[in-house]
Amino acid sequence: MSDLPPSPRTGTGAPPLLRLSHIARTYNLGTPAEVRVLADVSLELRPGEAVGLIAPSGAGKSTLLHIAGLLDTPDAGRVEIDGRDLSRAADRARTLARRDRIGFVYQFHHLLPEFSALENVMIPQLAAGAGRAAARQRALALLAMVEVDHRARHRPAELSGGEQQRVAIARALANRPRILLADEPTGNLDPDTAEHVFTMLMSLVHAEGVAALVATHNHVLAARMDRRLELRQGRLLPLS
Ligand code: ADP
Picture 1 (cartoon, rainbow, N blue to C red):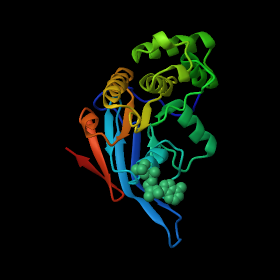
Picture 2 (tube, rainbow, N blue to C red):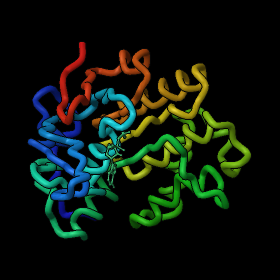
Picture 3 (cartoon, helix red, strand yellow):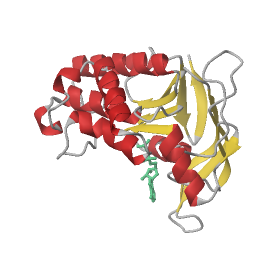
């Protein structure tokens, strides 16, 4: 278990689960080829809220999600998870926060090919110390919520693209993270499948009360999120 403090799961007065303050990130800092990707990014995510992150390719969405997910360190600014600044915390504290507090979904599913859908959703729970029976029960419940429980015994290669991505969403939520970070989660899918997977993602976000930051190019899907932010020239601007 992590040593992070608890905070309320839901409620209008709930403190932000994720707070980014004045984040800056430049690649190859100090070289002639330096690329300033994030200039001054601030953001708060609250429980049960799904926020769309809209930007063209190359604008810095992945960089921002990596910093929010404690996979990368900003050059300046703070990353607070549940009120605790982890931007420059020791590796172990960051790893535990990532394991216990944050779920990731990528454009590609990254499921383990030699394991079934059920095992793919159980494995992160077992790694975090859950017992087999509890992990299995949680995995089956999540697979049912994304309507792939009838495929629980199948390996990823035996699933359709939409089913693979729904399993990946179930896996991301397996350890009951407070924050879900998704990088173009429907970007590889045809429009109808994308719509279906997105609907599942939104219903799980609201059912589980997580705070979700979802990067997408798709303005139709973005319109269904609670708020939208546009990443432009290294800054976040609200989109109506
Ligand atoms: P997006 O996810 O919006 O497509 P990225 O965050 O992947 O954007 O990249 C933003 C910019 O930063 C791009 O110009 C990319 O080439 C550059 N970039 C990303 N990662 C690195 C890196 N490790 N080193 C140098 N430049 C990078």
